[in-house]
Length: 185
Image: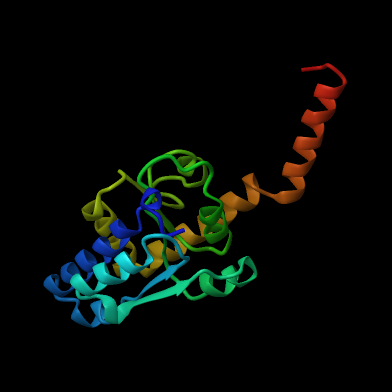
């Protein structure tokens, strides 16, 4: 959702900072490859389009609007880095798990349940919320280092396979329910 609590404006600001930093660092050709894909809809949709224009990145930013869940894998296959710049509490981070399961490194705010599904500096990066500069800094690291992106993506996929396997989780839940039913808690 494109709502304040999910911090999409910080991602747009970070991408604008990232582009400038790449150019300033002598990587203009790399800066020209940067694209921002924003999937979803919400009350900030028009405001975020205006922000991308104000920050002069509207030409590299694509807003899809709402998409059916069945199309999420298609969009994940289009990206190299996934960002979840939530401002405040995030319950679990299903979208982060989905991205990691696809082998995509993640940069996310260190809030709520996100640290449960991201291993900082291993499967992605955690940053303080509402900090576009820190977000841009981590994006810069991943953009300039393809090996780091691949390594974090691989480790993220392995982490998700190990800790969030659907069959294993269902068995654990069944076991807990049975213990509760039988009074063995």
